[in-house]
Length: 225
Image 1 (cartoon, helix red, strand yellow):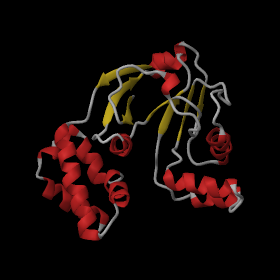
Image 2 (cartoon, rainbow, N blue to C red; image 1 turned 45 degrees about the horizontal axis):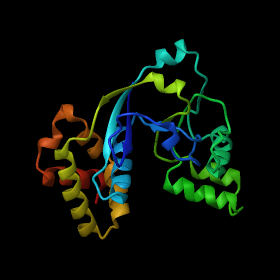
Image 3 (cartoon, rainbow, N blue to C red; image 1 turned 120 degrees about the vertical axis):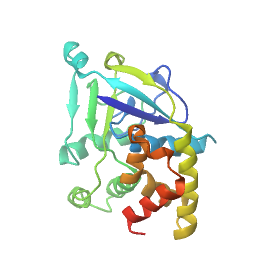
């Protein structure tokens, strides 16, 4: 399986000690099989470091996981089990993991969901209300490699995103913000989660070679703007 990691820098070597605590599945190295999702995070994190961000591509060999008998947990959606697992990890700011899984896979608690988690923690909403709100949430995906042993299943494939795609990104986002009076966050959220962007990021169809104006037109048609 090809998976992607979005960050402000290229990843040459994975160091779990540099990974953040308080994440959905605990401290670990996170990847996704949705390239547009990784590119969205690359842009966000890159902006904070005043660069364009990078996506690093890996091959995830699940056969190695089975050979090494790694302990894995998988959530198929925004279930009550997912909720009960994520909440303690989100609250944990310690170095110590709250679980003993090598690999955890499931959906992402993005910004909107994180806000709802905060509402739950201060008892503004119930668990039932939280899960009901997620029923129609767009698909997302992440895999957390929590232990050094689990990293053996990842093989580095290639480095940063093609620069031509970045140039298109900038033109499309700026125009989207101006034409529809959107904030940068709102424009980025619509663009990077669109089918148009997914096709643009797939270099095999060579959409990235087309003028940005044509890509922008496709995006507007898709989003019915």
